[in-house]
Length: 426
Image (cartoon, rainbow, N blue to C red):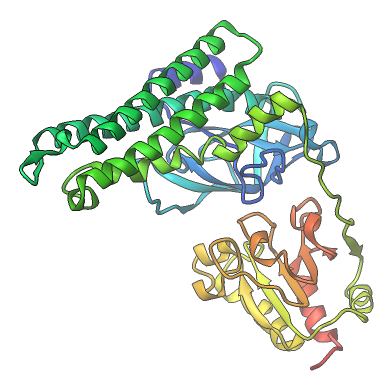
């Protein structure tokens, strides 16, 4: 149970670590596309879904997690929850092996029927998106400051290097072309610093232009950091490319500041949206056709092309040997077996079987998603499928939003029937 009067002081003193869970495989840049579900079960909520790229994931004690309490309301259906380490059904997934900021642990969070007490709702129902966006405004100022520090550090190291490194009998600082480029870089660093200070002042005073000023600061500081560090590596020559000096690390660390807490492209979208006030329109997808029985599903697939079929299993199965049901379905349909990232991370399937953003991209005629929630970046690898069939016990699993056909039910009951009754032999 979350006790505000106890936990907040512990967080402020550093006795406990906090983390923020917004990003999902299908809700990165578009934070409104949340697919983690929070079901009201009377005296508690039940969370199902996953979050990715969470700083402090697995080591934090307290998490602020965004989840859908009403999918029909879009962003107004997102609510914020306090999830604490040790809650039933809450565990850490894969820890990412990153290019930069390697001192920061970034992991996947998985919610499998996670029980969250009613009192752990943060704020009001449906107000989570507002909480998330206000947090991003502050977070973007922090990332802008991080980027500015990286730029300044790389710049200072480069100045010192140029003042003692000699080529052709002269210090590098004596070459006008290089000195002029350094002059431009320092000008950009100072300009970015002023934008950041202005945005921080606006935030502190609670002025209405907080969102766009934070976006401008982050865009400017992160772009400056990337350009300064790339040039720093270039000016250091071969020494800039090896790990004996910290220059290559500055460049690796700078890149993430153009990505997290909103990409540079999103910052431009925020800024231009303020200028022109335009919003992009989204195309609606046809709703999934749900069936009560295997016989109904098979009949519906009668006229669907079946030349290529992939049968994939996910975390809906609990151990390796149970994925044999998916393998049997693949054999019965004349298809091939695949797996979600979650199943591979748990050691239930081989890496070459993984479909998703970090695995294979497939586009078969039929794609059976068995026990796959539709979260762990899986959808990115199979959206090109002509027809997606979802089989999942959770009627609110995000996979059903992407599927064309589906059955809500236990994979252990449905798959054996499907294997037995599949009539379309190749």
